[in-house]
Length: 400
Image (cartoon, rainbow, N blue to C red):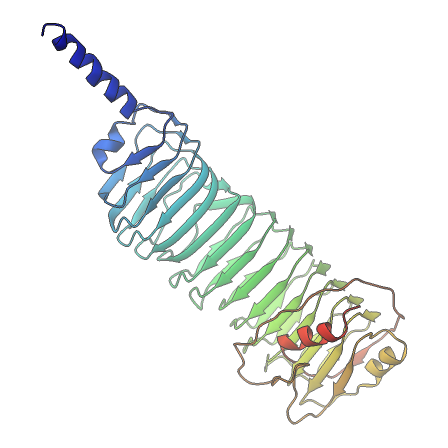
C-alpha cells in the first residue's frame, strides 16, 4: 500500500504531461483546455476547437501552429482571440460559427490557406499585422464589410462569394495570383481594387459596382464580367488575356483596353444595352471566336489580323460590314461568318437574344491554337453585342 501512494501521483503527472503535449493533435472544448497549452509557443500538430465550445475563447501564448486551426459547427462560440499567433502552417478553417462576432489575431501574418464559411455575425477582422502569405483565400457567407487585415502579396485562389454586407475590397500589396480570383453574390455596391496586381490566371466578377486593375498586364486565363453595375471598365496596361467576356452588364457604357493585342480564347460582348461603342485599337489576334451582339453602334478593330474561330456580329445599330467581309475574304476569319446591321432581333452565335436581360447566360468559350492570318488595317464598323454561349457554339463547330 505504501508504494501505491507514490506511484499514483507519478501516473497522474504522466497523464497531465501527455495532455499538454505540444507535438500531438490538440482538441479544445473550453477555455480551461486552451489554458493548458499556454506554455506551448509552437504546436507541431493540428488544433481543433470542438463543436461544443462556447463563449469567448483565447489561445494565449501560442505563436505558431504548424498544422491546421479549425472550428466547425460551434454555434455558441462568440469570439476567438490568439494574441501571439503569427503562423498557421496549414488550413485556417471556420465553418458554421453563427454567433462569432470577433476574430482577433493581431500578429497573424502567414497561413497555409483560409477557408471561412457561414459566419454571419463576423463583420470585421482584427488582424493588425495583416495576413501577407496564403496559398488560397475562400470566404463565403460572412457578415464582413471589408477584408481589411488580409494584405496578400501573392495568392493562389481568391474567392469571395455571398458576403452580402461586403462593400469594399482593397488588396494593395497583391502582385500575382496563380489561380482563380472570383467575386460573386456580395453586396451590389461592392468596389474591388487591386492597384498593384500585375499578372494572374482567371478573374471573374459578378454583381460588383467597380473593378480597378490599373497595373494588370497579363492573364493566362479568362477575364469575365456578368451582371455588374459599373458604368466603365478600364485595363490600361493589359496586353494579353484568355477568354474575354462582358455579358449582361446593364449600365456599362465604356470599355477601355487600349493596348490589348491578344485574346487567347473567345471574345464575347453581349447584352450590354448601354454600350454604344466598342473599340480595341491594338487587338490583333483572337484564337477563339468573336461574338458581339446588342444595341451598340460602333465597333473599331483597326489592328485585327486573325480570328481563329467563328465571327458573329449583330446589332440594332446602323453600321457597315464591309471591313469584316474583307477579313473573311482574306482568310483571316477561319470559322463561320455572320454580320448583320439594323437587326430587329440580334442574336448570339447560338441563337440566344443579344439584347435585354439574359443574366443566366454563361460563358463556356474555349481557346484554340494561334496561327498567322492576313493583316487588315483600319477595321472600323458599327456593330452589335451578343451572347456568351455564341462563342462556345462557334468554337465547337470550328475547332482547328
